[in-house]
Length: 196
Image (spheres, helix red, strand yellow):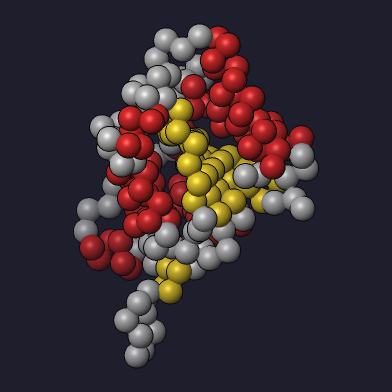
């Protein structure tokens, strides 16, 4: 079964040698080779404005420069986020992007009369978080309880109806050997092939 896959590269640095870009490309290569449809959004190449008011969030629409991203989000059946861990969570650019996307009309609808809970608009989609970090991934899971990715999984993506959300945590990336990087890339290529 083929799937429609959206890969979102959340590294703010546009340098092509960033590991996040190589991991995203490996996933895309695996997915494409398996016959899946793949689209990609590289946030470092977009102008993602910040939201400043509640009214702007509730009544506004994503800016014209991000309209294609909202369309891609609706199109996708599986969404892959690839980003580095910064200060225990996602980079600010990715958070700003999610604030523009996980909003009324794109990711949820306000409660209808007589209801108290918003209606998720992105049900039926799954996601994978691919997160690189300088610390050991096991330390992030056990000591820090994966708090940054847990919030993204439950409070943001879960609110929009995206589930299940799986994680691939890649630790000790600084100074990793070529063999280690090749192993990570092969793992992502395999995940892309299975659209897992």
